[in-house]
Image (cartoon, rainbow, N blue to C red):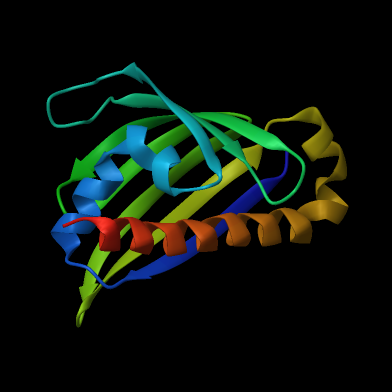
Length: 153
C-alpha cells in the first residue's frame, strides 16, 4: 500500500450555511461535480448524521475509477465533518469549514492508502501523477461547487 496525505482548500464566495447544506446533499454531487458518477446511500446512521455511510463512484482525469465507502465519524454543524474511507483507498479524512472575510473556506484533508493491487505496484513511480490527479479532481470540484451555489435562487 502507498500512503497519501492530501490537502485541498476551496475558496467559496458564499455563506457557510449554503456551503454546509450543499455538502450534505451527497446524493446530488453527481449533478454538479463531473468526476462523481454516482452516490449510493448504504446506511443512514444517527439523527445527527454520525454513522451515515455512502458509496461513492468516481472517475478521474486519468483512465481509472475509484469506489469508496465513506462513513461519517464526527459531525459539528457548519464546522467539521470527519469520516473514514474504505474501498479502493482506505483511511480517514475531514472537511473543515471556516469563514474568511466574504468567503467560506473548505479544507479537505485525506490520509489514505491505496488498496488496488495495480496502484500499489506502481505507486513508487506514479505518486506524483496520483497526487496531480487528485489536485485536478478537487479543483474541478471547487469550480463546480461555486457554479452549483451560484445557480441556486
